[in-house]
Amino acid sequence: AAGVIQSPRHLIKEKRETATLKCYPIPRHDTVYWYQQGPGQDPQFLISFYEKMQSDKGSIPDRFSAQQFSDYHSELNMSSLELGDSALYFCASSLEAWTKEGYTFGSGTRLTVV
Amino acid sequence: AQKVTQAQTEISVVEKEDVTLDCVYETRDTTYYLFWYKQPPSGELVFLIRRNSFDEQNEISGRYSWNFQKSTSSFNFTITASQVVDSAVYFCALREETSGSRLTFGEGTQLTVNP
Image (cartoon, rainbow over all chains, first blue to last red; front, side, top):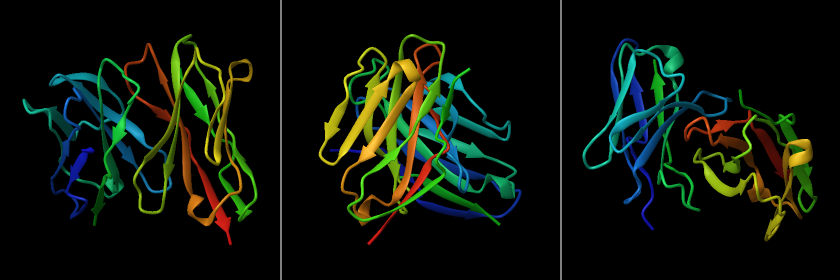
Protein backbone atom coordinates (compact mmCIF):
# COMPACT_ATOMS: atom_id res chain seq x y z
CA ALA A 1 0.00 0.00 0.00
CA ALA A 2 1.15 3.53 -0.71
CA GLY A 3 2.59 5.42 2.22
CA VAL A 4 3.43 9.01 2.99
CA ILE A 5 6.51 10.00 1.02
CA GLN A 6 8.90 12.61 2.31
CA SER A 7 11.85 14.04 0.50
CA PRO A 8 14.68 14.39 0.94
CA ARG A 9 15.45 11.81 3.61
CA HIS A 10 18.51 13.72 4.76
CA LEU A 11 19.48 17.34 4.32
CA ILE A 12 22.51 19.27 5.46
CA LYS A 13 22.38 23.05 5.38
CA GLU A 14 24.48 25.87 6.73
CA LYS A 15 23.28 28.54 9.10
CA ARG A 16 21.18 31.24 7.45
CA GLU A 17 20.45 29.08 4.43
CA THR A 18 16.98 28.01 3.35
CA ALA A 19 15.53 24.53 3.08
CA THR A 20 12.43 23.06 1.50
CA LEU A 21 10.95 19.79 2.67
CA LYS A 22 8.37 17.96 0.63
CA CYS A 23 5.56 15.62 1.61
CA TYR A 24 3.35 13.48 -0.60
CA PRO A 25 0.35 12.17 1.33
CA ILE A 26 -1.45 8.90 0.85
CA PRO A 27 -3.84 9.12 -2.09
CA ARG A 28 -7.35 10.12 -0.92
CA HIS A 29 -6.01 11.72 2.24
CA ASP A 30 -7.06 15.36 2.38
CA THR A 31 -5.19 16.54 5.49
CA VAL A 32 -1.46 16.97 5.96
CA TYR A 33 0.40 17.63 9.20
CA TRP A 34 3.97 18.67 9.94
CA TYR A 35 5.82 17.78 13.13
CA GLN A 36 9.31 18.64 14.36
CA GLN A 37 11.25 16.24 16.58
CA GLY A 38 14.43 17.58 18.13
CA PRO A 39 17.14 15.21 19.38
CA GLY A 40 15.82 13.22 22.31
CA GLN A 41 12.51 15.06 22.17
CA ASP A 42 8.95 14.10 21.35
CA PRO A 43 7.41 15.27 18.07
CA GLN A 44 5.94 18.76 18.24
CA PHE A 45 3.09 19.83 16.01
CA LEU A 46 3.94 22.63 13.59
CA ILE A 47 1.07 23.12 11.18
CA SER A 48 -1.66 21.31 9.25
CA PHE A 49 -3.62 21.76 6.05
CA TYR A 50 -7.03 20.54 5.00
CA GLU A 51 -8.06 20.83 1.36
CA LYS A 52 -5.15 23.20 0.68
CA MET A 53 -6.12 25.59 3.46
CA GLN A 54 -4.27 25.95 6.74
CA SER A 55 -6.39 24.20 9.34
CA ASP A 56 -4.32 24.43 12.49
CA LYS A 57 -1.10 26.06 13.62
CA GLY A 58 1.19 25.01 16.40
CA SER A 59 4.64 26.09 17.47
CA ILE A 60 5.92 26.96 14.02
CA PRO A 61 8.54 29.72 13.90
CA ASP A 62 7.83 32.77 11.76
CA ARG A 63 10.88 31.80 9.66
CA PHE A 64 8.97 28.73 8.52
CA SER A 65 6.09 28.64 6.09
CA ALA A 66 4.15 25.83 4.52
CA GLN A 67 1.50 25.21 1.95
CA GLN A 68 -0.52 22.44 0.40
CA PHE A 69 -0.80 22.31 -3.37
CA SER A 70 -3.60 21.31 -5.70
CA ASP A 71 -2.28 17.75 -5.91
CA TYR A 72 -2.35 17.66 -2.06
CA HIS A 73 1.37 17.46 -1.64
CA SER A 74 2.79 19.87 0.91
CA GLU A 75 6.04 21.78 1.30
CA LEU A 76 7.63 23.17 4.43
CA ASN A 77 9.89 26.12 3.69
CA MET A 78 12.46 27.07 6.27
CA SER A 79 14.51 30.23 6.00
CA SER A 80 17.37 31.77 7.97
CA LEU A 81 18.18 28.36 9.36
CA GLU A 82 19.56 28.14 12.86
CA LEU A 83 21.49 25.37 14.57
CA GLY A 84 18.42 24.68 16.71
CA ASP A 85 16.42 23.80 13.62
CA SER A 86 18.36 20.55 13.36
CA ALA A 87 15.70 17.93 13.85
CA LEU A 88 13.69 15.15 12.31
CA TYR A 89 10.72 16.58 10.44
CA PHE A 90 7.72 14.34 10.01
CA CYS A 91 4.82 14.70 7.70
CA ALA A 92 1.60 12.80 8.35
CA SER A 93 -1.63 12.53 6.42
CA SER A 94 -5.16 11.52 7.25
CA LEU A 95 -8.73 11.83 6.14
CA GLU A 96 -10.55 14.72 7.77
CA ALA A 97 -13.51 12.43 8.05
CA TRP A 98 -11.35 10.52 10.50
CA THR A 99 -11.65 6.94 9.52
CA LYS A 100 -10.14 4.02 11.40
CA GLU A 101 -6.92 4.63 9.48
CA GLY A 102 -6.13 7.65 11.59
CA TYR A 103 -2.78 9.21 10.84
CA THR A 104 -0.01 7.80 8.70
CA PHE A 105 3.45 9.22 9.20
CA GLY A 106 6.19 9.45 6.64
CA SER A 107 9.71 8.29 7.40
CA GLY A 108 10.82 11.83 8.11
CA THR A 109 13.44 14.23 6.82
CA ARG A 110 16.50 14.59 8.99
CA LEU A 111 17.72 18.16 8.76
CA THR A 112 21.16 19.03 10.04
CA VAL A 113 22.15 22.68 10.23
CA VAL A 114 25.89 23.29 10.50
CA ALA B 1 -4.93 22.26 27.99
CA GLN B 2 -3.93 18.78 27.07
CA LYS B 3 -1.00 16.88 28.38
CA VAL B 4 0.47 13.43 28.07
CA THR B 5 2.88 12.11 30.67
CA GLN B 6 5.16 9.16 30.27
CA ALA B 7 6.94 9.07 33.58
CA GLN B 8 9.36 6.31 32.60
CA THR B 9 12.17 7.88 30.61
CA GLU B 10 14.11 4.64 30.18
CA ILE B 11 13.37 1.00 30.86
CA SER B 12 15.81 -1.85 30.48
CA VAL B 13 14.72 -5.49 30.60
CA VAL B 14 16.10 -8.86 29.69
CA GLU B 15 14.62 -10.73 26.78
CA LYS B 16 11.44 -12.68 27.55
CA GLU B 17 10.52 -10.44 30.44
CA ASP B 18 7.16 -8.66 30.41
CA VAL B 19 7.27 -4.88 30.48
CA THR B 20 4.61 -2.21 30.96
CA LEU B 21 4.94 1.33 29.65
CA ASP B 22 2.83 3.86 31.48
CA CYS B 23 0.88 6.73 29.96
CA VAL B 24 -1.24 9.24 31.83
CA TYR B 25 -3.16 11.96 30.04
CA GLU B 26 -5.07 15.10 30.89
CA THR B 27 -7.97 16.48 28.93
CA ARG B 28 -11.25 18.30 29.50
CA ASP B 29 -12.80 16.84 26.38
CA THR B 30 -15.25 13.97 26.65
CA THR B 31 -14.30 12.79 23.17
CA TYR B 32 -10.66 12.13 22.52
CA TYR B 33 -8.32 9.59 20.97
CA LEU B 34 -5.24 7.94 22.39
CA PHE B 35 -2.39 6.44 20.41
CA TRP B 36 0.79 4.50 20.86
CA TYR B 37 3.66 4.81 18.39
CA LYS B 38 6.95 2.96 18.20
CA GLN B 39 10.09 4.74 17.02
CA PRO B 40 12.93 2.31 16.31
CA PRO B 41 16.52 3.52 15.91
CA SER B 42 15.89 4.04 12.20
CA GLY B 43 13.63 6.95 13.18
CA GLU B 44 10.27 6.30 11.60
CA LEU B 45 7.07 6.47 13.65
CA VAL B 46 5.22 3.19 13.58
CA PHE B 47 1.53 3.22 14.51
CA LEU B 48 0.61 0.59 17.09
CA ILE B 49 -2.90 1.37 18.29
CA ARG B 50 -5.64 3.99 18.47
CA ARG B 51 -8.27 4.07 21.18
CA ASN B 52 -11.42 6.18 21.34
CA SER B 53 -12.49 7.69 24.65
CA PHE B 54 -15.85 5.97 24.50
CA ASP B 55 -14.35 2.51 24.05
CA GLU B 56 -12.69 1.26 27.20
CA GLN B 57 -12.36 -2.30 26.03
CA ASN B 58 -8.81 -3.52 26.45
CA GLU B 59 -7.07 -4.87 23.41
CA ILE B 60 -4.55 -7.57 22.74
CA SER B 61 -2.54 -7.95 19.58
CA GLY B 62 -0.05 -10.76 19.71
CA ARG B 63 2.49 -9.92 22.42
CA TYR B 64 1.08 -6.41 22.80
CA SER B 65 -1.78 -5.41 25.04
CA TRP B 66 -3.27 -2.12 26.11
CA ASN B 67 -5.13 -1.22 29.29
CA PHE B 68 -7.30 1.87 28.96
CA GLN B 69 -8.79 3.20 32.22
CA LYS B 70 -10.71 6.45 32.04
CA SER B 71 -11.10 6.53 35.83
CA THR B 72 -7.36 7.03 36.21
CA SER B 73 -6.77 8.70 32.82
CA SER B 74 -4.28 6.04 31.90
CA PHE B 75 -3.53 4.10 28.75
CA ASN B 76 -0.78 1.65 29.57
CA PHE B 77 1.00 -0.60 27.12
CA THR B 78 2.34 -4.06 27.97
CA ILE B 79 4.74 -6.14 25.94
CA THR B 80 4.72 -9.79 26.89
CA ALA B 81 7.82 -11.93 26.44
CA SER B 82 9.86 -9.00 25.16
CA GLN B 83 12.32 -9.41 22.33
CA VAL B 84 15.44 -7.53 21.32
CA VAL B 85 13.55 -6.15 18.30
CA ASP B 86 11.18 -4.40 20.69
CA SER B 87 13.97 -2.02 21.61
CA ALA B 88 12.77 1.43 20.61
CA VAL B 89 11.32 4.66 21.90
CA TYR B 90 7.60 4.37 22.52
CA PHE B 91 5.35 7.41 22.42
CA CYS B 92 1.86 7.80 23.79
CA ALA B 93 -0.17 10.54 22.10
CA LEU B 94 -3.51 12.29 22.53
CA ARG B 95 -5.87 13.95 20.10
CA GLU B 96 -8.72 16.03 21.50
CA GLU B 97 -11.91 16.47 19.54
CA THR B 98 -11.99 20.21 20.22
CA SER B 99 -8.38 21.03 19.43
CA GLY B 100 -8.26 20.27 15.75
CA SER B 101 -6.48 17.25 14.47
CA ARG B 102 -3.11 17.72 16.08
CA LEU B 103 -1.48 15.04 18.19
CA THR B 104 0.15 15.84 21.50
CA PHE B 105 2.88 13.38 22.32
CA GLY B 106 4.29 12.28 25.62
CA GLU B 107 8.03 12.55 26.07
CA GLY B 108 8.55 8.93 25.17
CA THR B 109 9.96 5.89 26.92
CA GLN B 110 13.21 4.37 25.70
CA LEU B 111 12.86 0.61 25.99
CA THR B 112 16.00 -1.49 25.77
CA VAL B 113 15.62 -5.25 25.64
CA ASN B 114 18.88 -7.04 26.33
CA PRO B 115 19.60 -10.55 25.09
